Image: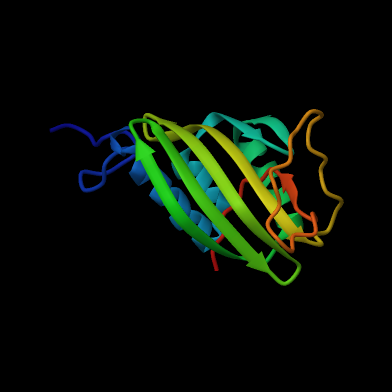
Length: 167
């Protein structure tokens, strides 16, 4: 054999050899550790496309950083919980939540497209209960609110994110 697989050693598969589940599990390991830069280097394509309910369309690694910054304005030192990860072929979906003294995030749902061992597209949506450091982003015109659970005062806000730091 000559050389090693692209991006790996003889003992580690290169990025293209990783399945969608392997890429997304590696993504969550980095986010739990709070290591955004490692996550970007190992799991995201440089030209990743991101679509976020509250933040619109972003592109590239700087787009991921921007959306991570947005999430931190709501829950800077949060405890994240990853409820479900479902994958099929090149597609994946993650359901998550987070709690912090200043806010609670629920209904977090990210979907992913993974090709050649890298996240090439991600959609992001979540709802925030509580105060955060900035005003809520308004939903696009024509949005329809889902029925609220009993006792819900309507303080939920949907916005974009990019960081899943566990703790």
